[in-house]
Length: 490
Image (cartoon, rainbow, N blue to C red; front, top):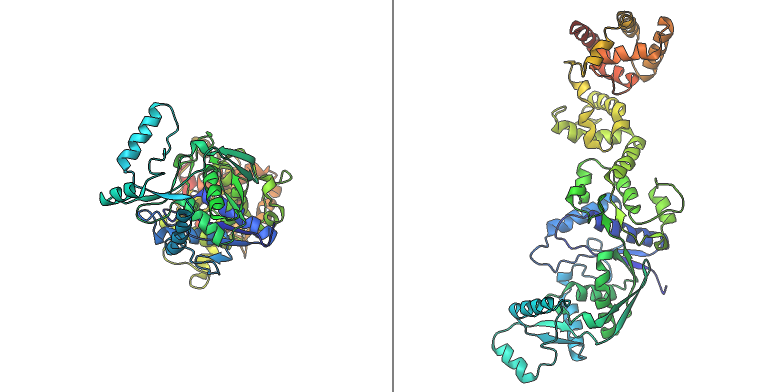
């Protein structure tokens, strides 16, 4: 590799950052950080109808949230800007003029109707649709006649005949394409806007990109881009095409397989480090069996030679498992801050709650979150687990739960529990653990005979947060009221 590695992520701002785009950005970022290279972010906004600054800002915000910073490009500056394609039109015009001058490109005046008729004729003969070169060798007089008709031309690239184009792909090895079935392709539309294949070549060349790491769907574009590099006398980058992402049913990933945009996972309370950890495993294999990686470990281990050729499967269950792990490893306060908007939306809390403006409420919420933290796959699920802390109207979840409170030892257990609780000067996790231990010892009963009646009397349920978490959260007064009301309901 000559000089410093330079990679790029070049999204089209036509919607939010897609999971596939985020993975491409991640692989580029890891490669740059591993090899001491530079990461460039530029915007491909030549789809004038669909591109928007709102989408651009969403993409950049999602990259920042994931922790994928960049060294150069949009919002960062650099020596090779501008970094939006619509601001680079003079560069494309200059390259177009060079191709027209050396005979590698020509003006094409065919109408949409003529092109569609040609396409249908080829399909009828079971041939691949392609441009057959009607305007390839127009005379000056022929061109003037078409201009006089008011036709606006496109610029087409003159694909050389019978050439084998070889892509030495860093993931897939040697891939060959034949030029004969390609047809002369459009490089500049009639409105003067360059097509993707043309603009990307000029951008990668002028920005001195050394490696292009992108999705497999771009592999078929690569021979066209190589031909353009050759015609312009430019050295192309090294290419690496990463496998497709499929749903669990092995079809192309879509909304039915789960959310497809990074912002949707962020809005549900997924953690950025979990999404990074999950995305890297979509198409890259670590050396061992390990599946949980810090970002530093990923940078240390990442290499293109462990990127798979086969499609990666997006498994939402695996993402939930990874995210659940990171939630459990996080300080409760971090999860509280993420959980408050969901609790507010569910009507459990009101207004802003911070350690500064509501210290007691914030402390109470922290205890509550800690009690259910290990049960969360993503933070939005918290509303499914915390109703027991907000509603004192206890209802039995089943007849089985009700029967537990009819066991003969229950009155003795509940009386002894309340006596000990009332006598405790401080009710916290440690003191409650000691209380429960002494209770089983003094009553000479197994843990289930003691803990289960207390749980059902307090919640009406047979499962839920640990009692040593739950009891300090509810407090002495609410516990006494709940036990009284539950036993009256038997």
